[in-house]
Image 1 (tube, rainbow, N blue to C red):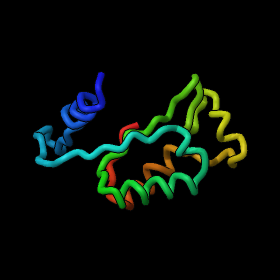
Image 2: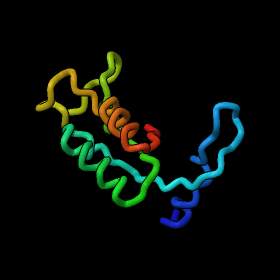
Image 3: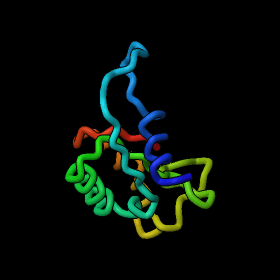
Length: 108
């Protein structure tokens, strides 16, 4: 699949909908966020700032990789990249909180 068709798929399938199910008019400018950007609070902040500076409005966040989790889970093992972070650090929760402040949508 070419890069163009992938970009088109993102625009077609991630169009925002209102609470009543009716489609809202708007453009989706999505950024794929690889799990490596979630390893520390500082890297998340940097990614959010970069997304806003480059006029993205939606983040597609990779929260699973190699059978582990970049969020707090009782069912899935914590990602090895998070071993140096405090146990209460939840990368997905941090992304959602910071993205909300920056007016970015998040799809995990």
